[in-house]
Image (cartoon, rainbow, N blue to C red; front, top):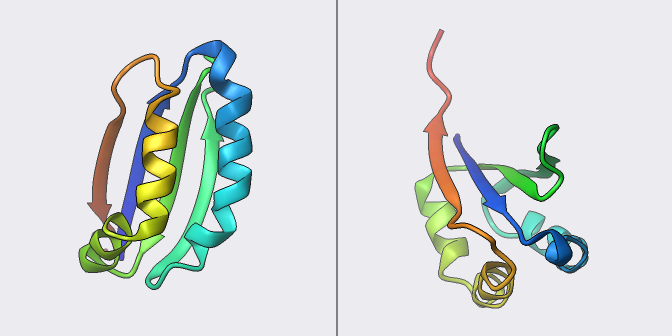
Length: 96
């Protein structure tokens, strides 16, 4: 399983627009093939910073989503609201 974290810093006045966009798209993202989990975290110290935390079957499933029409709709709309570049990384669950 691939864990994906994307940390996004928004212009404070754009947070309501981002939250509306997330509400509109979260179920469609969760329905993408290979998506097992999606949630949104808000930074405890800065209310304009959010992270998406998602689980994917593998890197191929994430790449397929990133090439989808849905991603092509959601990501550009999200990027327009940023105050700083996003920070994203993927991790694998390590064996015990």
